[in-house]
Image (cartoon, rainbow, N blue to C red; front, side, top):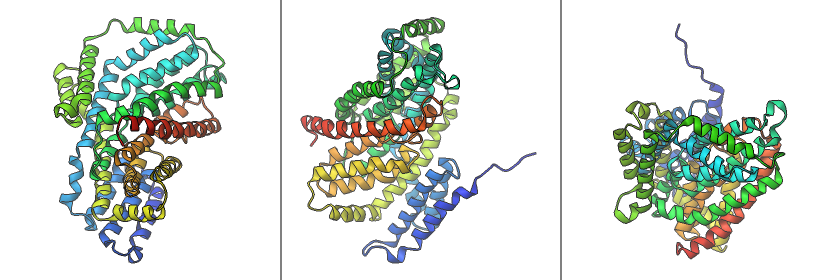
Length: 473
């Protein structure tokens, strides 16, 4: 007998109450702000609260918000659906499909095993090897959750169990805890290094474009290169010192990886074609701005190649639910954020906050904004939701305070990933890795707080100087 889907209606209470309260406060809205701008703000905030409480999956929450925008007449339908044609969002979708190729062909697993076999003699070296895998795979994997859960976590868990490190046996600190926590941070760092390494990054790119700031794949990568590499060197070492594994030498890891590679056999034709497709993607993402091919066009081109080559089937495309879900709910949020700007809410907000920061040096303003952006992530369970909610407003404030536009746009983009260094629910990879039981919640929060300070110093301090050398401000 058919039955209704289970819906936790209690989780609708918070977004509904927040939305209605804000909606009916329109009479006390600031002077000069249109009622449409205020109503758009009310629906947007209610939608963001819904993304946090999750009464429905993210796509369902976005759908309810979309309906509210159109039914209330806040935005006409023809304008509302424009978000579904956003090129940056389609780039995310295409990169999800590329990620599917890594997992389906086994290429991601093979790359990881090769690194372990080559550099896996010591535990710290093993951590660096796994971080290097994340670095190699990240440009073509916009779902950092898929990268952590589909490629890295199975390898790390197998390695940990090979050394008898299992939380159910009370032996998690042997090696598993260290590797799990290091992967969490490697994932966040590499997500910050590439425009196509986390789903929220192209969203930031789209928001920046609305304010006249041109972020490309190449300028994002170049700006993030030095602080990213420094972080990948320093952070695993700091974790090793703060959270030392009991097992310091791992000669068996090399033999284990060699055995796994032997079982996989010679590199397959699908893997070879996946390598070709990935190289094409990287080359065009890097050179695209010089030869007139944008990032989204490259994504479509590469997926076409993978389909023709037989790496992916059309059923693979249809079954990639994460991509289609992202297309829907990000399109709605981008539409809402764009309308907040178009209707005048974000310009008002930036002017108001900018006035309160008046008289401060622009670099001080940038630091204040980045630190506020980072620590407000304690209230979010999704990096992409946080970026969608706050990036555009914070960028507008920075520009109004005369912070160099590209510096502000890229720094906020980087911190949209680094702010995962807060909680065990901070991003998609967090519950996967934390949920394995290798790291206790108190340890997770304590070490993340310390490493968050490290990121602030490296990325604002070294990162801004590096961007100055590059002539970006």
